[in-house]
Length: 141
Picture 1: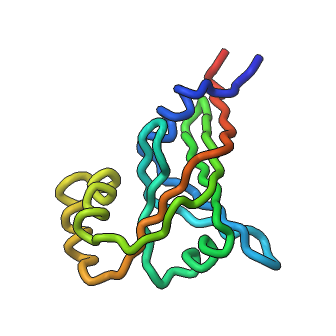
Picture 2: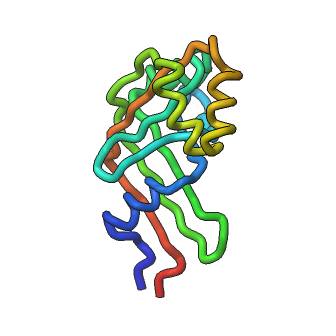
């Protein structure tokens, strides 16, 4: 029996609301692994925003790629892990780029408040093209 998701299943799962776990290679040590908010539409790129001064930005630029894992912590457990090359790391427009992401995770009212509360932060928008996928849906029978 295979628990591997189909292409459509894994893309739909990744597009659902999950906190992503970002993994970045770091020279001379174990990979850096941190939680992130992200967005994804099936067939498109993975996008996330982070502070311009975050250590992970230097690591991302050096590595040129990253992994992202999302999971359902409720039984029956499932996960999607994806790896790919970074398409771009560009200056983010705080209002335009952060608002949809904050609303996705916090809802409209709290998302808008988060964007307002973090006004003045200097952020970058990171885009990754998925290349390798790993997945499992342990609810498949």
